[in-house]
Image 1 (cartoon, rainbow, N blue to C red):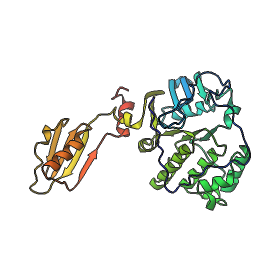
Image 2 (tube, rainbow, N blue to C red):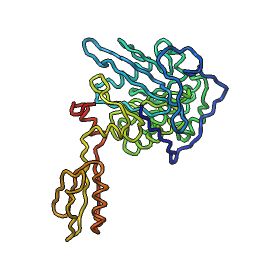
Image 3 (cartoon, one colour):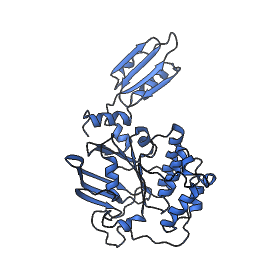
Image 4 (cartoon, one colour):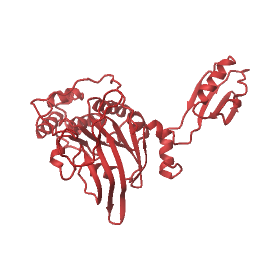
Length: 354
């Protein structure tokens, strides 16, 4: 199983951990001697010493509405400490899948375990260990930010000091602001804070940045990284390719109720048409030589002073080296590689075999 857990520190975010207001104990984690049912691997460690045991195990998940199959024998596993992205077009079954994993939607068949527990039979035991921000999340327009956090924290047993949560998620200045007056980014910060008032081990975020402007989206991305860096496992549901490519350690592409591919974003991109385009502009009188003779190059196209070289992943380095060898320093040099969006389109249209 591929994992690429990043440990980048966040600029402008407070690296503090929310303190508990009273000693609390969690149910034993899988592998610690508790009988939580079958389906989980024992604890392991990666090269950096982080625990990498499976915290979500789904096998053969099936769900139909009438004569329409929404989920068709879906299998997936999520490891501790990773951001796991779920991609898919509208109607692919993303929301149904994460709601079923949380025990919010009954399924027709399948094996489901979250932290070794059955999300339906063990719902009460899981409640203190799972946080969720659903696609349809909302609050009363007149409810104030501070009131919301204080109420949710109390319902969660005051595991987290709600005042510190205000500070951690940049909500202190909004404490007396009504929900209806918040911007999109401010609402998302509040929803994340509410999803974490029980100090969960697993957090589900469904279409978190839908409708946000670019600045608010990037602000929310930083919050998601902070959740992971605090030790939680994050399941991120999105149809924004750049979001998953930026955040996810691994991602699954869901199409027609099935997972068509699951890997790191970089490895998923490698499934796409591998053509890499290197573009540059020459000065008058400059001639780059026989770039078409370089290994991996399949096409060299020129239009005026503009040149485009099409080849494999190594082509940009070879082109740059050849230009330097003949003493040419282009005014610009742009490399266009396949993106996650390219492979997503190909996977969901049947152009690529997973």
